[in-house]
Length: 126
Image (cartoon, rainbow, N blue to C red):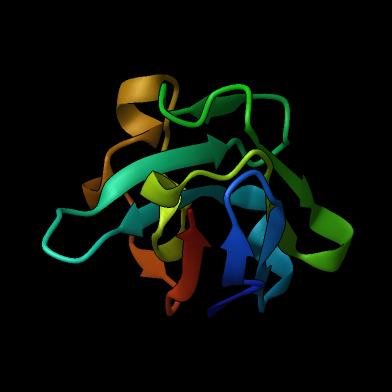
């Protein structure tokens, strides 16, 4: 089970940190991703991290502004979002899976995640 939190209302240029807390001792064997969905839009990939934390992947739209990290001891994955823009406004979802995944095409594909948390709303005002 995944629980996302940390969303809120922030002005453009501000920062937020999202958390995705997982239950279960095997979380350290799961890769984890963040996706977002704006009203009327399809769900899109934001960032992902391998089970070990050694590999991270980012959408071009957030590269250099967002940082994904994980603390397996706390079974939590974080998304630090800096320099937020109004176009970052969306519901953010965390997801996890443990199948074999080795490249951006895999990590960024929402169909390759079986476990999803509820969303957390991020609103960036201009």
